[in-house]
Image (cartoon, one colour):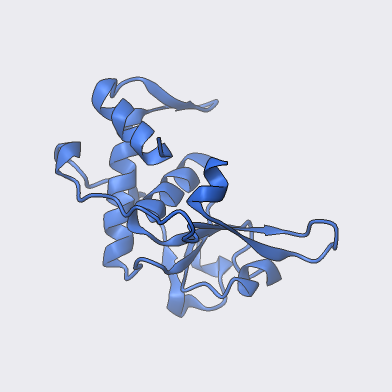
Length: 165
């Protein structure tokens, strides 16, 4: 079962069940599912398309996870970074960079400011959502930067086959 399937299954079966707990809040499965759908819609309206490489530089772990899941639903390839203008992030040659502050990114033409509004706005029944993109077993769905033993950061491509092994 894919992680998106598990989240939406829990959102249907037990919407008030906690999906994540942080020191200051509890986020339910319903909140995660609705956030994923709202972010997916906002990303699509912003121009993010299937196959785009999207660098995600958000500090909130909950928001970061919701954005990453929304990009997965959309069929975009996500990569998490701490600094959007770092050499590692630039090496990925992203189509889009998602940030919380425009001052964090040099090239604003391909950057999207992720605000509170991104996470709200899906009020309909979850079953009415468009179907999620399903990656082929060997299609890249996630990029991770790793220096491994060389000390030089390089991108590692993850596919559903690798993630399920």
